[in-house]
Image 1: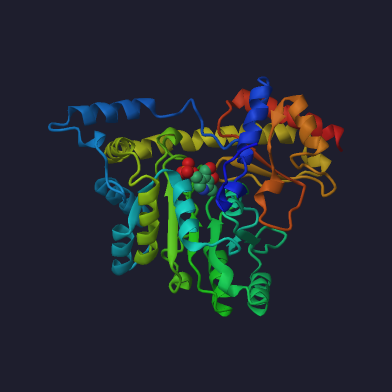
Image 2 (image 1 turned 90 degrees about the horizontal axis):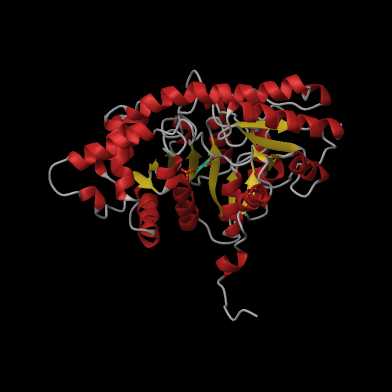
Length: 420
Ligand SMILES: Cc1ncc(COP(=O)(O)O)c(C=O)c1O
């Protein structure tokens, strides 16, 4: 028997569900995984990274990039990324200064999400989340002992303003409002739904919170904002929208999806210097700075226009991959079996709704049959903070090549036919 006495956090920690999906993969080498949100390996920007490394090596003077960096991140990289973000927004001069001053770099945007939740929440607290939401974030909340409450949506998946207001009013009546610590949503080509929030929907969330006096920090996760296929989604972020002006704001994004996941560099900015300072204090305890070399490589890449060049490759590549999977599902006849999904305009996921009676959960007969047929998906049940439906599935077309995606789609439809 172990003599280790773990902390509450240590006791609550569970293996990430993605680890369970990965171990299924390892046990079944013939399995085609459309589960993990990995990025495309064939288009990874090796030449651009090599060029950046050579340019760094040729710089005169000491290789400062191999030394520790600063906790907040490399100044030039922050400036380049802040300029890029501000070009998508319409801030006042004062707000633009704030964005620049409070810009920070993290070890992936996942770290920034964790830092934010660590400084804002105690066990038992509540965070409002989108429905469906990013399942790794939901797992993180449960690891921290924090409750996720889904923001209600209508039949089209749009935020339902009156229902959200009623939800927050109910929290106030039950004396729970003091436990509400943040609102979180993935607003562009979301993981898992591929939906984007328009400005009216973002205003609706802000209005519902304001009407109930719940001015809590908002965390906008824009991980896929630049990963559109043909056109950017036109909505501005909470940084620019006047409906959110009274709220402390945290805007997060990442270079893992748009450039190289292996460099694991994320970024963000906050309208609230106090929130940022606390996050950075805790980051100091985690690592006192994201890998300086990785940041220096990206700084070089951005300075040379390498991010735009990579996006010009990725956007059509992901659109083709999305099409390969979508076509396999459609041509196999999945819609006629009562399944539906929207065709994404960006991102890495198809979000499938199965007939209501079909259980697609991780322990379901359907999930086991898919593994036996050689195809692995993410059960949609993982993507809901509460009131969990069983009939959704997330498919990722990030990593497999087009012919494999087509084969994975065929295998998937084959199983769906047996369960129809
Ligand atoms: C919505 C969303 N947010 C954040 C992340 C974290 O990304 P990273 O830590 O690689 O920057 C991911 C990764 O899949 C994601 O899908």
